[in-house]
Length: 129
Image 1: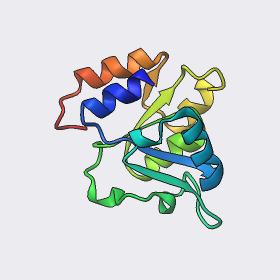
Image 2: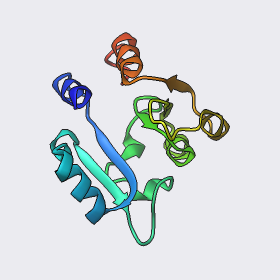
Image 3: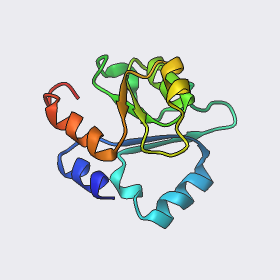
Image 4: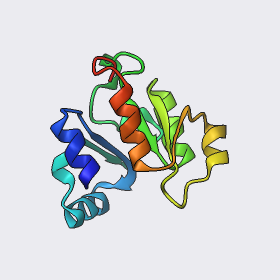
C-alpha cells in the first residue's frame, strides 16, 4: 500500500494488467481498497488475456519503447511486457516467483524486495518512465 501511495504521489501512472476476469479482479481491488491507485485496468476477456496486448485498455502503441515497465511474478507477465516493448522487471519478492522461469521468459531486471524496485525507480531519470 505504501508503495502504491508513493508512486501515485510521484505522478507515476499505474496500470493493472491481469489475467483474471474483471469481476474477480475488481472484487480483490475493492477488498484491498487499491483500485483508485490505478489509472487504467485491463482484465482477461473471453477473447484475449495477458500476454496478448489486445487485452490492454490503454494505447500502449503510442508510448515510446522503454517508457513503460511491467513488474511481474510469472513468465506470462514478462512475455506480455516483451510484447509491448516494455522494460521487463521480475517481482522476486513474491514467494511463488520462479527466477529461472522469469529469466527464460526474458526478464531484464530483478527485484528481490519492493524497496529494490523503489530504489531503482529513484535512479531512473523521470523523463524515461
